[in-house]
Image (cartoon, rainbow, N blue to C red; front, top):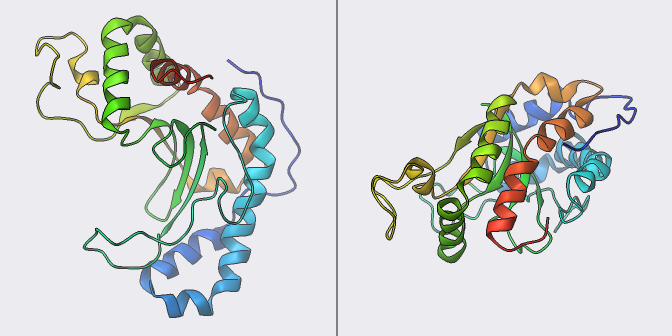
Length: 235
């Protein structure tokens, strides 16, 4: 486990104003409303999020120098507020959450292995792993679990010990090529390999919020190392 060194903070990463903006956005989810409240978005969401990314960057690099923490308005670790509604029945234009992802530098999009912080009115959580991997990557992870189960089991135990649980979509039947009586069948049926820990929003408003989040993300390093090993990525 990487040892973290606290860095002084004069205030929490976020404030109640951040959550209030998300609440208002959920009630008035339109481009006109967002444009009118652009300054409020900058002050309560984007600026605090970019400051958080900048402050946590050395901690992320300490977990793995292969993970990226980029404090940029566009194209960095802060996920854009606009929704991609092209293939969704929900045509509202904006996300009602803050998403911050520290993904592997060899990954090109949100489907890369990474660490994640989610902030929303209906709940906040810290997560790690890989979401909706393409079929080739998914099969590589399943094959690795089949052939090298002990490392995966150790990663799961470490996550459980620190309050995380595996989440995401799973198949209803065994994946093709794997025995229906396989001792790791529950894990092999996963379509997402994501560890999640719910946290109270108030925790993000405390002075040590960055250090707290970094500490929680560090607990996921064994899972991240295992997934990268399965995908033949450096970690």
